[in-house]
Amino acid sequence: MASLIAAGFGLGLYMTELDFSPLKLKLYSYHKWIGVSAFALWLSRLIWRTSNAAPPLPAAMPRWEKTAAGASHLLLYVLMAAVPLSGWLMSSAKGVPTVLFGLWRLPDLLARHEVLGEALVALHHNLNWALAAFVALHVAAALKHWMVDRDGVMSRMFHWKQD
Image (cartoon, rainbow, N blue to C red):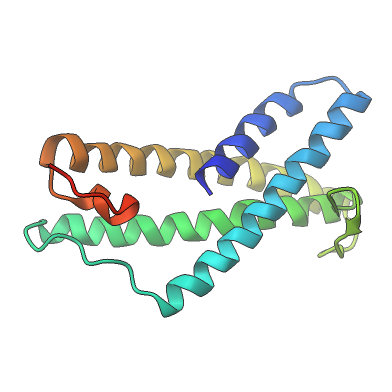
């Protein structure tokens, strides 16, 4: 999931600065493929998480950190869904079909609507920056637990024994 998020974000930054060209259109397709794949992976993660509880946080972790961890994970899940959905809605409103891997046209989620399309461009842009900020915060917190606290939080994700 992290790789898809990073690739989609980086590609999005790059492609939006290009002049209109066949390359730009191809990159937009790749960007959409990444978004649809990320959403499918998010959905499978959500299904998995509903029947498989996350490992418990260390008992010694302060309550405020546990609360912050829960809230940030929830917000990350919301943003991981909202970003690709906002892109799909934006494409639909702008009248640009989403065709997965050049093979399967996905249904439009909205009728073509110029003004709504532009509003969704701004929403998609802002959601991406919010996701990037929360990913950076998540990484910083994980590194703090690994390098400073050395409390085993990282082993919950990677299943290794921490020294």
